[in-house]
Image (cartoon, rainbow, N blue to C red; front, side, top):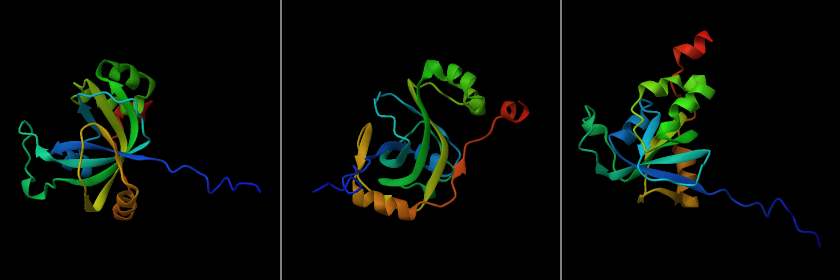
Length: 163
């Protein structure tokens, strides 16, 4: 008896990164398309869930304090690259549409670059972890239902419009 290969397909694991507020809020609103992280990962997912951690970054003031959500997935992002901060210039040289990165704070040491973000219509509560972590299948089903259908796109640089 032949085995049905379609049923034997492996489900892709979906990963998330936990980000302090207000940075997660800015990603969710389409105001931030790169994140600096101080940890390295070998994982390079195509899409990643952005989780708003329970912690708040005291160094980042926010005028939308009442809108901040903690302990929930707030968006799903398309990952364009995960870079060592010293390689940002080389990446932009090969991908001129990301020239806006040169004006951003890319102190890293690792920079996650997004080119599209799907905010959650309703945030999805979930416990977060340090680093890049797995999202349970059931939670991901809810995330897919709650994500906006139209993504917010990263800014297009003036250089890419001209060239």
